[in-house]
Each structure stands twice: as structure tokens, then as C-alpha cells.
Length: 238
Image 1 (tube, helix red, strand yellow):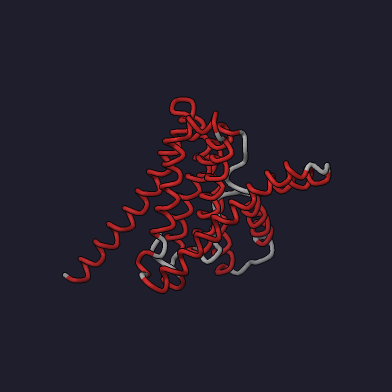
Image 2 (image 1 turned 30 degrees about the vertical axis):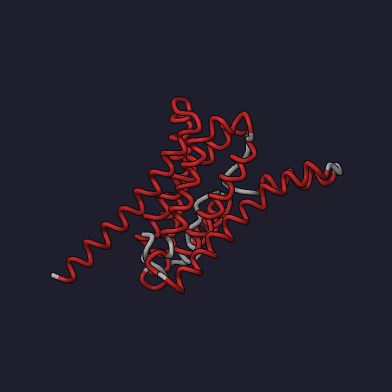
């Protein structure tokens, strides 16, 4: 799931990573919004606010909003920077370190968030945007741009295109490929929604500490990958 890249990567691997990370993104999206009333998984809305503040010549507020966009970008940059470094040194850690970093950020905000909500809510927004930038960059790199999990605009666009193509491509091979792609996108959308609903329900009981569940899901995904690879290696030795 996290360990395969390029030709060794299958649709099953993409499905697994999409399921895991889209659920986490949905959870972070809702928990972040409930906590600080800010979008914390994408920057489309922030860009609109930035332009609005700039047109009003409120440059201080515009700069403030621009920081939200910057931290998402920075997360994507750092994530791929890590991937490039470890691809040249320790390839087995290529996706492990960025994922653990994201898990640590979510856990850190989960633990300190109750204090930060009143003292420095922007730090929560910056941190979650950074984490989601990391996640989006990571999953884009892993899946060769097939999967994105932190927002739904592109997914609905791609799915609309593919649904329309079903009416024109009649050969079975192409149709089968389209259906698999649509299925993948529907699963991402459904699990983003499920993560959001779960985040909303858990937030009523645990508040921002709900992010600890997101961190735990990421770590369990890595553990599953590690155990699965070790079992496969043992089988080959037997």
C-alpha cells in the first residue's frame, strides 16, 4: 500500500491508500473546521478570501490568509523533499517518514489543541494545512497522480469526465478501465464523507482530541504494511 511505486503498484494498492487517507482527510476536515472555523484540507476557499482581502486593500488580512495557502504548499514541498532524499539513501523509508511526520503533527495538535484553540487557533490551522499538504503530495507521488485525498473538486471533475466517456467508448477493455477508475473515485468520496461524519460524531465527545484517531489510523496503516511485507519475505525464504 505505502511501499509500492511505479510498475509494481496495482489498483489494489491505490484502493488501499485511497481508503485510508481519504478517511483521515475527511476526519481532519471536519475536526479542523469545528475547532477553528477554518478550511484545513485544501486552499481553494482561502485563495478566494485572499483575493477578497487584497481587493479591499486590507493587506494585513490578505497576508494572514496567504499564510494558510503557504503552509499547505510547504507541507507538499517538505513531503516530496523527504521522498526524494530517502529514495537516494534508504528507499525502504521513502514513504514511512512523511507518513509518521503527518501522524505526529495530528497527534501533537490533538494533545495541545484544547489550549491552542483559545491561545493560538492559527497554529492549529497552519499545522493541519501543513499535514494535509504533506498527505496530498505523498499520495500523489505514491499513486503516480491517480489518487488525491484531501479535497473533492478534482475527483468530481474526473468522475464526470469518465462517466461521459462510458457513452462513447464501447470496447470492453477501455470500458473496464473506466469503471475501475470510477469505482476508485467513488470509494475516495464515500470514505472522505465517512471520515467527516465520524469526525463530527467523535468531536462531540472528544473535541479536538479526535485528531488522535486520525494519527492512530495512519500508524496502523504503516504497521499493516510493515507486517505484510515481513510475512511475504518470510514466505519467499521458506
